[in-house]
Amino acid sequence: MRDDNCLFCKIIGGEIPSSKVYEDEYVFAFRDINPQAPVHVLVVPKEHIPCADAVDAANSVYVAKCFEAIAKIAKAEGLDKGYRVINNCGEYGGQSVQHLHFHLVGGVKLSEKIL
Ligand code: AMP
Image (cartoon, rainbow, N blue to C red; front, side, top):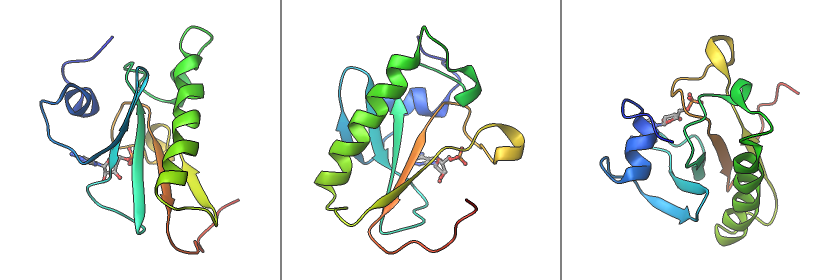
C-alpha cells in the first residue's frame, strides 16, 4: 500500500526522479540526495511503513528483504571492507522522511560512532 503524500512512495512510483541502484518486488534503493559518504544509498521497502516502530509480523518480510538487498548492493558498490546501516526512527531519532528506510553508507573508513 502507498501513501500519496509520501516523498519516498512518489520516488518508488517514479513521479519524483531518483538515482536508482536496485529494485525488486519488495525493495527500492536509490542514492541519497545529500550523501554523507562516498557511497550513501537509501534502501526502502515498497510498502509504506512509516518507521521502525510500525514494523510488525504482517510487514516484517519487507525488512528482511531490505537486508537481503543491502548485502547485494554492498557487493555491487564494492564495499568489501565494510559499511554501516543506519535507521533513524521518530523525532528523537532524527527521522525526516516518514517512510521506513535504511541508510547504507560506506566507501571510506567511518569514524563517528554512538555505539
Ligand atoms: P532521515 O533523516 O533518516 O529520515 O533520512 C532521509 C534522507 O532522505 C536524508 O538523508 C535526505 O538527504 C534524503 N532525501 C530527501 N529527499 C531525497 C530525494 N528526493 N532523493 C534522495 N534522497 C533524499
